[in-house]
Length: 131
Image 1 (cartoon, helix red, strand yellow):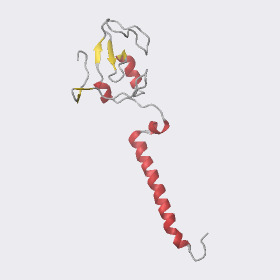
Image 2 (spheres, rainbow, N blue to C red):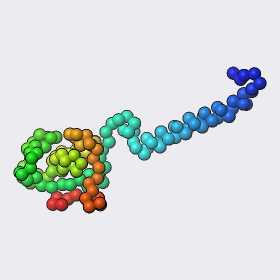
Image 3 (cartoon, one colour):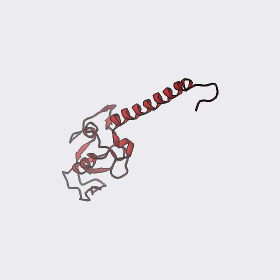
Image 4 (cartoon, rainbow, N blue to C red):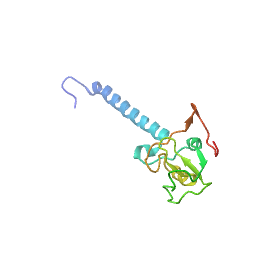
């Protein structure tokens, strides 16, 4: 209700300003949903990108390592198994086990450390057995 001496036209600017602010907030949220995905808003895990996955080191297991069991499948490693050691936390997994995990998550299955591209010598390296 307008106060004495003020008309509805005096409040029109405030109403329009409020509508513009609301529309800007909605636009920012829409851009965020399309950029980061809905999972960012609802807290669901996101898959690890194929680009980052390709940078993570692969190697063949040799029996002279401290960790002898894959924490995902609980199977003992055998000589020649292809394993992946995550660079930041050092956890080791069968490649097939951890890659299935990365289809739906972007963190380590054990410590939940965020997985980032493996960088050696200042450049991102594409991992391959024997590197």
